[in-house]
Length: 220
Length: 220
Image 1: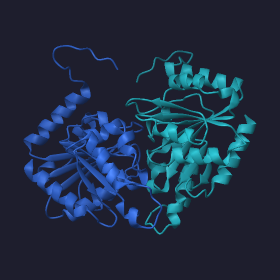
Image 2: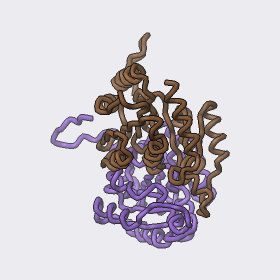
Image 3: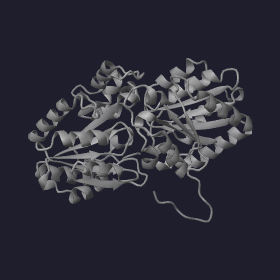
Image 4: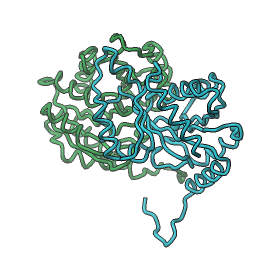
C-alpha cells in the first residue's frame, strides 16, 4: 500500500486504536503480551498451563483470536480465567479495534497480565500492532528448525521465543530439530530475544517462563 | 472490502492473471496443483518424496513460494526436478502474476505436472486463485485435530487433504490427534475431498497419493 509522506507520520486506523490500547493499559499498569505462531504450535495449551502454574501469583485474562469457533476461549475459561473470544470470520490477524472492544469486556482492573492469542498465522499478525507491550512468538519443534530463516520478521520483532513441544525431541519420534541452530538463528535476527524451550504438555521449562512473566508483570 | 456490484463480475488483477495461467495450462494440457498449509507441515519434504517416487512416470516441476530464502527450491533441485523460487519479501501468499512469471521460466513443455508450494500460511493463500486446477491442503498431525473446525475455508476449497507425519502417531510420542475426527470434519466441509494419511519421511501412504496424481495428470 502506498502511503502519503508528510512531515508527521499519519497514523492509520489500526495504529490509532493500538495507541489508545497501550495508553489504557499503561494508565492501569497492566502487562499485555501478543502471542503469535503458526496454527497448532500449542498457544492455547501454553496459556492454560501458564494460568494454572501462576494461580495465586498473577491474575491473567485472555483475548482469544480465531477465524471460527470459540473452542479456545472455552479451554481458557476451564482454568477459571476470564476470556473474550474474537472471531475474525476469515481475516488472518487481529486488529487493534477488536482488542479495544475486548479490553472493554475484560475485568482488567482485577488482572495483572492480559494475553492476546492471535490467529494462527506466522506472517500477517506480525505487521499489526495491537497496543501490546511485547510480542511472544511460539514455534513447535514439529514445525522444523528452518523457521527463523524463512519467517524472519516475527522472530526479529518478538521479545520472547517459546520453543514448544520439546518433549517430542526425546520421545523416540523422528523429529529433525536442532535447538541450538534455532536459538542461534533467532539471536542473529534479534540479539535480546528471550528463549524458553518448553513443553506445555509435560511442564518442562514452564517454571523459567513463568518466572519471567512474574518479573515482567511486576516491572510494568 | 466492498465490491461494486454490476451485471458482470469485474475481474481484479489477480483473477485476470489467474485466468491467463489456467488458459495457458489447459492449452498445454498440464496439471497444476496449489499446495497450502501452515509453516512446517512438511510440504517440501512431501514434494521431494513425490518427485522421487514418480520418477520415470510423471515429469514434475515446482514453483516454490517463500517469504525469504531459496532453501526449498534447493531441496527440490536436489531431486533433479526444475524449480523456480519466488520470494514474496514479507507478503503472506503467492499471487497469480508471480505464477505467470514463474511459468514462463519453467520448461513446461517437458512437464506433466506443476506443483505450486505456497507460502506457509493456512489462511491468506486460500483466497487467491493462482490459475491452478486444484488446491491441496496439508495438515501435519503435530498441529492438532481441531484445524478443519478452526480454519474451515481451506478444507472446504481443497480437492485433496494430505495428513502428514502419521509416523508420529505410532512413534510413542504423545500426540493427541484423532484421524477419524479430522476426516469426518473435513468431509463435513467438503463431501468430495480426497484424503491421504501419509508420512513423507517413512513413505507410508505415499503410493495411494502418487497413484491419485498419475490418474489426475492423465485425465487433464
